[in-house]
Length: 435
Ligand code: SF4
Ligand code: SF4
Image 1 (cartoon, protein in one colour):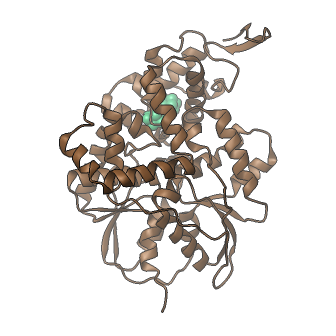
Image 2: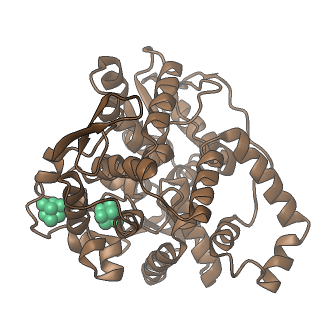
Image 3: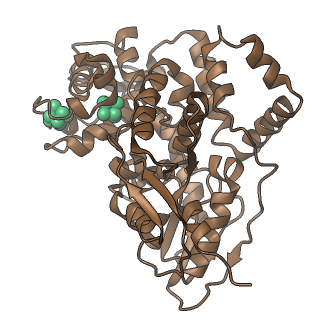
């Protein structure tokens, strides 16, 4: 329950049980849980471990007990919260509207500030968070990774299993795509619409997307322009703050969000993203930057690219291929976008779209979860690969760069002859340019 203690400044500091006053998890959100258990079968970690405390209901119970002062932020508490993927499958299932994603992010912020973690874990997670959401640092890392691959060092390391004892580094090595793109493609700041004009969109180029999958951004630009959208692509737009938010670094996420929003003026009709995690975070800005109508207006303009392209009639050529679709968690659960990517793909002549069993089960990627919790991520990836193999598809389409990396890594390791693509890449193959 709420109480007060004396803070470092000497002023009384309001506390909510074990939580401090900075963005504590909302009590009304916690109290909304009626313990029905409907969410349990949808939770990936519960499905793998079968432990109540690794289920959404168990985690809500733990957070509420801490908020009511019945529990402190012990290593056990932290472990159950760390193991959560933040996939929000529980939110889709919950009939009471428990805002699990926001509760988790707020609790992680508290853990970040108050709980102690082993040094190695702290250093690794800080390192990942300082590299992945920073295009400059990520470019440096990828430069080193290209040298590591092309010099033959990677082959040697893998042959000698040198990284085997260092599980997290081995996970990073395994995640590297076979062919890393040479460098980021610089996109123009403005691209005119072609044909009948539909409106103006601002494109978020993302951090991982722009460096690891520049072809996804290039196809996004080409297809949106061809569909009649003028594009504004602000330089130095920065990071949306999604990874910081998921890690509970809420103040950093807030300042990144404010910087990003300043780059997209009022003249755009939509802010478009092709990365599910970014879209989900941007739609959640009003929760973390409460009371600002400008933030609300920005968030209402956010669209996943599939939402726009599914409505457009593009001239399509035939592609004879069997495709299956994996629902990225932050697209399906975070943004409730499920039908549009499927519609977009099914419309391509010659494409046979087969449903993937358990398509909404997390693949284990979850931001940098696969590098922080590689064992659980591997177990979930195995479940995903079994469904992919059973689907008979030769292409898996999914709308998030993290999922592409994770599923591609699994397919390579298992020897599955399956191509893993973003839906716009597949659509781009069907929309060829004349001449
Ligand atoms: S966010 Fe995902 S992993 Fe976490 S409790 Fe909900 S369903 Fe389970
Ligand atoms: S479905 Fe919702 S109300 Fe039911 S146990 Fe899960 S979180 Fe609580």
